[in-house]
Image (cartoon, rainbow, N blue to C red; front, side):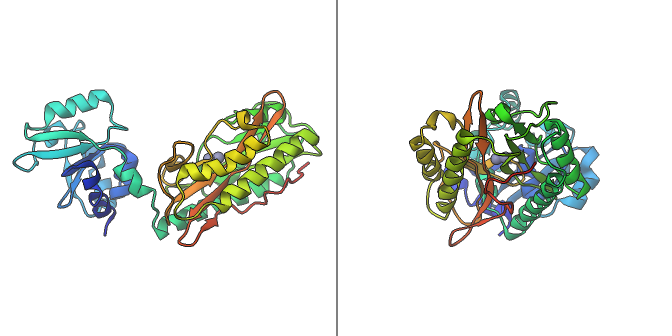
Length: 354
Ligand code: ZN
Ligand code: ZN
């Protein structure tokens, strides 16, 4: 079964006959196309790929299993025709399509076509990785690990957060990857910001430094966080580290086929709440990773998807104490038939890097 076949098999969930795919990440997943303007119209027996003249030769190289049609950039003419006769229910990606584009589409398709909100179908399939996709994520993750090891050899204290972030991003590029997202390097009280932007501030002695980074390689992302010490950070921060480390280990142990995203989230949240830091853990436990850094499934209070073999998720509890500092520990994890495999290779014990 091709990816498009597997997505078609999900049409019943939404009661649709065909699906218009406009999210370019989903177009890439289904067809292999990496350009910036294309639409897919697909169904059990339909495989239309529409792109404009700029991408015709790129599509010929990349796209397989679809009928390529060259159209003007807005696709209007092409979407007026090619539909079956009689009533037909056509899904569109309501979680992604701008309202204005939906209005245009509704004004373009013939009267027998009923547009139906059907977002999330391709994403649900994308969440279940094929072995080749797991290999790519594994490769991205080990490239990221190697890059960080090389940066830590130069030490942390005495360099600015921005210098460390930049060195890490360069180290990923030197190895053939790119940063998956802007690298986070947050020391001392700045570590209390989960999405801290690296500052020009010099990293001091005897403090914690949270580094959250990932590599993009061959289309697939990695995502990992470690918190290091530049010396003894004091009892309170050490205690926070211990709580986060325990929450991370227990939640990780719960990753296997079966539990819902919210069940795994609760494992870490209960531990952090019991330690009196419930208010200091304001984000979800984790998220899927693949063609995008944040994708399905979510490990969060709202996570209703049951984990299944092929899911790739992060497990990243954190405690952030305003004015004092923070700790986050994040692993990238593959759900397997029998449990899980951790793709992140660096130690999670509190490690001193001076
Ligand atoms: Zn991260
Ligand atoms: Zn993450």
